[in-house]
Structures are given as structure tokens and as C-alpha cells.
Image (cartoon, rainbow, N blue to C red; front, side, top):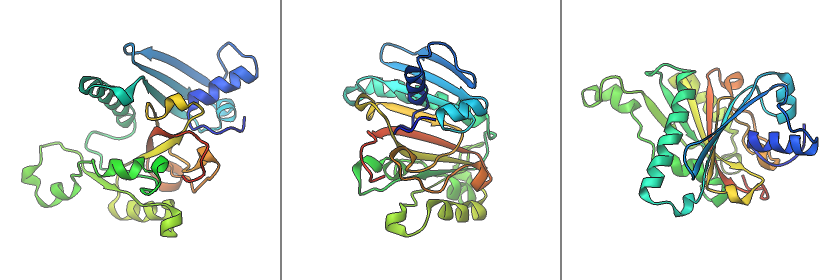
Length: 241
């Protein structure tokens, strides 16, 4: 495995191929690219065996990268289209791991006080939580609505508690069927900042992209599937995440 700073599976694959002079498919990896329109593309990388794990440095599973050009200057209709593409890709991965009524905990990772690491906490404020409404006021909830709860646990430097320890306590008490983790990611390209999103179904190791690994958040450590949604807020050159 190459040692470089990026959380994107597609970047890790491309760099491996470039360094080793490979222009064909790699054993252990399955890839496909779809251009939605002139501004939006989807690249799906699936790691299928140990050789793929060794090359990419990530666990067996699916990694979907959505690139959105000029997102910082997008109009309302462009943002809506991008949202729909993200929602569709996320829905496919969620449906593969939990039924449509499966209780879900959304977790916003990161430090709200550090801009490159503040994505997770900011998104949590926009999540429409339903768990308490379904429990106490079910008459006001549309039939078949999924139970959603959300939390931003902070970071070790401000809480003194590993994120895994916090989430393990929550999972053991409210028993969600699925975890969706939202976090920033590190990319090798400054062009990807605020315009690239990766969805994966293998969990997450917070801080791994910048060499500050924390305890792994995954089905192995939490007992339920963990889907990560990550946006390139970070270029990989800082150490604040």
C-alpha cells in the first residue's frame, strides 16, 4: 500500500496505477464511471478481495465518488440536481444494508471550531430527526417514516472521550439498525475541495486521511452497518481534523 494523504478510493487507485505503470484493470478492484451531465460524474469503486484491500488501503466494500464541477458557483437548479444524484446513490447503499423502516442514527463528526473539520457538526443542524416524534406524537408522522436520530459527538481534543466510546454507548441504548456518519475528507487535489463527495459502506477511521487516526467506526466495532458520507472540505495538508 502506498503511503499518501487521501481518503478517496479512486485517487488511491489512480496513484497506484500511475506509480506502477499500470493501464489495465487491477485484481481486487471493480470500477465504473458514469457522466450524469457535463458537470456531474459518478465513479464507483468496489474492493472485492484482499489484494484490493492491500492496494487501496481500505476494507472490502463499495466507494462511490460524486464529482460536481463549479459547485461553489452553482445555481439553485444545479444544487437540486446534485442533491438528487447524491440521494439516489445513498439510497442504493442504504437499501443494501437495512430495510426502509430501519432506525438510523446520523452522526456528524468533526470540530465545529475548525473550518476544514466542521462539516459534520454543521450538517447535523440540518437533519430532520423523527425518533422522538414517532415515539411521542405518532399521529403527526407520515406512515412508514423512518426513525432518525442525530448527534455531533465532538472530538477527542475537546471532550476527552473517543468518538467510538460515545457512539458505542448510544448504540447500546437506542439500538439503531444503521449508522450514517458525515465527515470531511482529505483529497490530493485542491480542485476537489467542496466539490467531491464520497459514500462508502465500510465505516470510517476518523483522521486517517491526515495521519491522525482515531478508533475505527465500523460494523466490527459497533455491531451495525456504518455508511460514511464525506465531502472534501480538507486538502490533507493540515493536522487539525
